[in-house]
Length: 158
Image 1: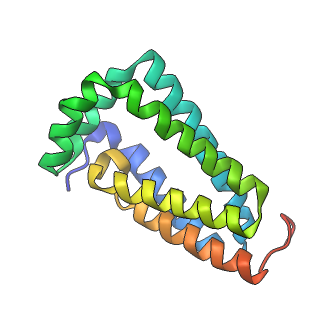
Image 2: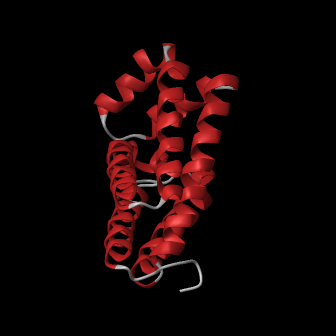
Image 3: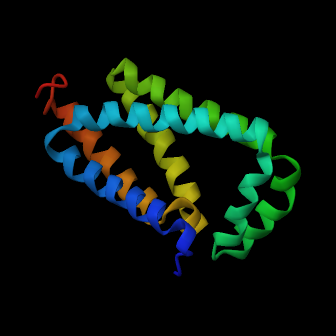
């Protein structure tokens, strides 16, 4: 996988964040929960804004994926329906953030399932999704969930 120079910094930062979240998830799962609220809230806002103001910006992801099926989808149907697909994705990201805020076992589990499905779905975008960011972050969310369910952390100070 070749990382184009214009994506190198974002790629490295994204993967460093995922590794940091994975490390934190073992000892500070509540921190990972709150950081995930921020990440998914920011993603929902960003995807909504881009879907409404500059939907064709997402066409670059088609050029970055090594998978022909994803490339064809992005340059085909998705090009004509970007906002129609991105706005529900943004709503899902917002739902994940809100369910993590609630911090009840069922809500956390639904949030992690939703996040995992989303993160695995974007993995084939390759550099466009900072692969392996989505796999590492999914693992961090699962460890976080396990830690919160076991009561490793009760609040932000633990």
